Every structure is written in C-alpha cells, then in structure tokens.
Image 1 (tube, helix red, strand yellow):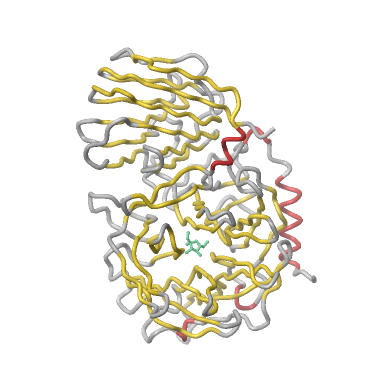
Image 2: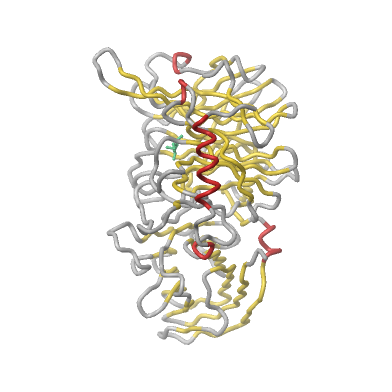
Length: 492
Ligand code: FRU
C-alpha cells in the first residue's frame, strides 16, 4: 500500500527518536507515548488475534498538535508492541487532524472510524474548523482512507447543530448493520449525541439524537462509548466544561458513565443519573473493547487537559491507564486491573495482622519501590485517619488518606516534587457504612492508580517525584490492623 509523505515521515521519526529515550524513564507495565505527545485512547479493538490500541498522537513535540493515530498491539494488555503510526493528517478533509474514534473487525478488515478536522475561512474572513467522520480500512498495520471520505458531514445533523463540534464516533455492528454515535452540540451550545446507521460503512444516514446533555452535565460530551454490560446498557462520555457541584464531579473535564436500558429495535435509550468513573487527578477519555473471552475492558488517558506536569527535559508525554475489567455491581461500575497483570508479579512481601503503632510514621521492611502492586487491607480501623505515603522520603511524598469522620479518601501530591502551582488534591466521598477498607495500589514510576474495595472506586494520578525516592510509609492516629501484600512488577 502506498503511504503519504506525512505518514512515512511520522513512522520514520517515531522509529528513530523513540529509541533514544532512556528505558529507565519509561513505565514498566503501562502503555506510553513512543515520542512526543499522546492523548485519548482510540480504536481499542480485537483484530487478527491481537488487541489493538491506537492513540491521539503528535510525535513532533510534547504538546498537542496536528493529530495522528499512533498504534500499539498486545496479546495480554501488559506487554505492548509499537506498530507503525497508522494515520497522519494527510488528506484535504483531515489536513488539520485525525481526531479520536473507534474500530471494529469486519470481513477480515480492520475498520477505523475517526474525525477528520480541517480549518476553513468563512465569508467574513474568520477562521474556524469543520469536523467530519471518516473511515480507514486496514490489515492491522497499514490503513487506507476511503475515497468516499468524509462519510458523515455535519449537514446531516438537525438544523442548528454545530459544524465545529462534531467528533469522536463510536462505531459498532449488530444484526441491523453499522451504527455510529457521535458527539455534537446543538443550538443552545449544549452537548448531544447523534446516532447514524449504515449498511456498508460508506453511506450513513442520520437516525436521531440519542441523548441530550441539556447543559446539565458539562457542555460538549466528548468520546462517547455505548455498550451492553451485565444485562444493562452503559453510556460513557467525557464532558467538557463541567462545574463542580460539591457532590461527585469536579470542574473542567470529567469522565462519566450512565447506566440505563437500550431498546435497540426501537432505538430508545433511557438513563439513570451519571457517576464519575475515576476520582483521581489524571483520567480522561476512556474507551472500552469487548474481549473475545467476554470481558469488557476499559482504558483511559492517564492525564488531564488542565494540569500539565511534565518536566521540561522529557521528550515524550502521556501514558494510558492499566486496562481495567469492568462490570456492574448494584448499578455501579466496578473496575479491576486486568488479571493478566498477576503473571508479572514477583518478589512477594507480606505482613498479616500487623498492628500499626499510632501517631508515628512507620516504614516496613521490603515495601519500598516505584513499580509495584500493593494491597493493604484494614481488618480493623478504629481511627480518625489512616494514611499511606508513597514515593516518600523526608522531602517528598504523595499521600492517600482515609478520613473516617469525613468519610472520604483523598490523594494529595502537594509534596510530590511539582515546580508548578497545579491542582494537587482530590477526594472521594464514600458511600455510608463502608467497613473493612481495602486499597490496591498500582505504582509504575510516575503514576499511581488506586482501587478501593475491590474496584468500587478508582483514582489515577501522575507524580513526577525523582525516581530514586521510593519510600512507603504508614500512619494513623488510632488503632489499625492491616494485612499487606506487595509484589514488584517485572516484564522480564
Ligand atoms: C478529547 C479530545 C477529543 C478529540 C481529541 C483531539 O480529549 O478533545 O474530543 O477528538 O481529544 O485530540
């Protein structure tokens, strides 16, 4: 297949430049940017016996720029293989970016659906952009954009819909053909999700607006995902411009899920109230895939648009979360790191029934590290507060605190080594009556993912603490008994 100059340049550049990065600077078990900037996960899907994960990509700098689709594959969600860059903004209709989208396998082809972006100048000489939906077909390495692109333009939307904000198609297939759910904005500037149908991935017709944000949960809903889970239907969206309401959502970009019912025959969707997916400081634009063994697996961008922490000397920016198996329990999403991670656990250190001395910072032998899977179970917690200090020394720490009176868990990276005045703390208000707290912490050098009570809550956070700082300390003001298990994670 003939490839464009822009794509071959990107392939050449990533191949040469990614090798120049010190491996000590790279995460061990997370998917990361080869070189330059990455944001949203894209096209997370199975094809030809492998799982493919593409991503929003600007290889040439550590900041967002004209978007490409980078590409990794895996067979176990932990070891990732870099594939050549898949899409470059090299066509008239996507010359300013190949934005987010999704993928599926069809008739032996890998179908990518993405948003093409191009800048236009209107009659008054003002610049704006046009977003359209496009298709590329491939063999798992090389992808050819359709001659018919763009296959959906904003003129198919109801009158008054934005021509600018029309992006992030979620494509799926059922016995009635192909469907695509696309983020859009209506006349009042509030988000809506437009549903399209096709028999052949080329000709699409508008079906209806499946859901309206009505200025209730942010504005534009980015990166929709829509799928069946444990007998219910789930809608994931990443709303922009939310205002904190003191309950669950914070200001700015959030990622939320709605559980509901979908009547596919009549194309009717009814939802309940939304919930936050991840309560940490760094999580956005998650996307899921259905594994052939039946698991629904979700991955998110472990970063946030408003807080740019990257130290200046880095030549790569961005990692993805550990893929998470998701399920529903009592109408809530449960998230657990993929079970494949367990086969990379080494050098177990365990403490059982350990009575933590009160009002003292305690360091336990063998628990230090920056690349680990650490479980702490509180079999007794008669205290006001209990904390785990990670990447800790006298000068640095990131602290996870369970505050029993306020009934919260917080993560605080104020002293993680930040040189900028950035957001550093966030908490979860727990449901009433939680006993026997369990914390599972995945730390991979500069990231911390916390899973509370077997996946009931998740919190993902970046820290750029010097890698030599690897203390793990515990602290309480009361009577705490813990069981601890710690494993190093090694892919060798
Ligand atoms: C979400 C997002 C998407 C868009 C992409 C551009 O983070 O803004 O809506 O497609 O990033 O890189």
